[in-house]
Length: 138
Image 1: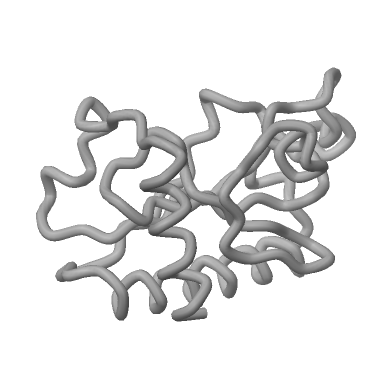
Image 2: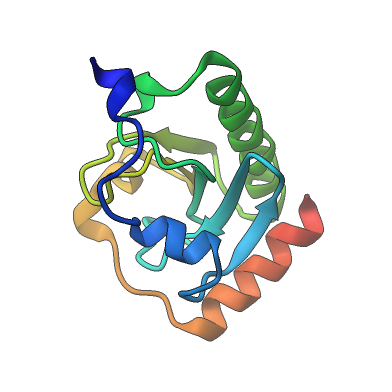
């Protein structure tokens, strides 16, 4: 059963970020999840909302945690909308790159902002500046 396989076999990259073993630009934290900037953003402000518990596939999340993650994603999207010049805020769950559920939330101005081939690495200073703006808006 899928629910019995919730914990990943090895600690994920995201757990290492959550536990501050690897640096991350956090914009939000609570007892159930964190949100940090994507180092290869689709657009500036691209944020990942990640549960503290390692659950590979989002459909295996318990309902309360899933609702909490989406509420946090909505709050971050509202902050992005106020900080960045965007028409909409994109949201995506794909889960192929890291076996740890995560919700991508990013400011968008057109459908082209949903093309993952447009992703480019962001430097530490850019991430810090964007993180400061989002934290202030939250």
